[in-house]
Image 1: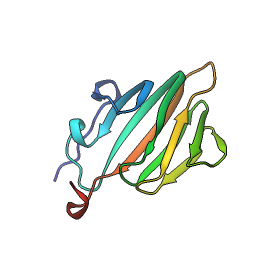
Image 2: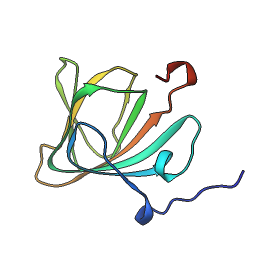
Image 3: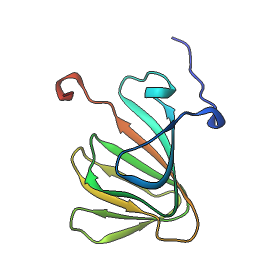
Length: 120
C-alpha cells in the first residue's frame, strides 16, 4: 500500500456538528482518503469559537498547536489548554471547548473510527 500525502493547503474542509466559529480541515480519513482506525483533523477556533456541550462520539485526542482553549468536561471545572497540551476523551465523554481569547487557536484532533460492532 502506498503512502498518501495530503497537503495542508489542499486538505478538505468539513463541518463538525455543534461547532460555531470553527474552521475545520480533514488531514487524513473520510474526505481526505480512507483510514482504518482513526481520522485526523485540524480545527481553527476563531475568538469566541466553540464546540458546544456534547458527548464525544468516539474516543478522541486533542493536541493544542497554537493559542489557548478552555475545556469543560461534564460538570467539572474549566481547564485552560495551551500549546503542547493534550487531552484524551473516552467515547461518550461530555465536553465543551471554547476560545475565550481575542486571538485564534489551532487544535489537532484525532478521532477513532468506530469498530463494526459499535457502528449504528
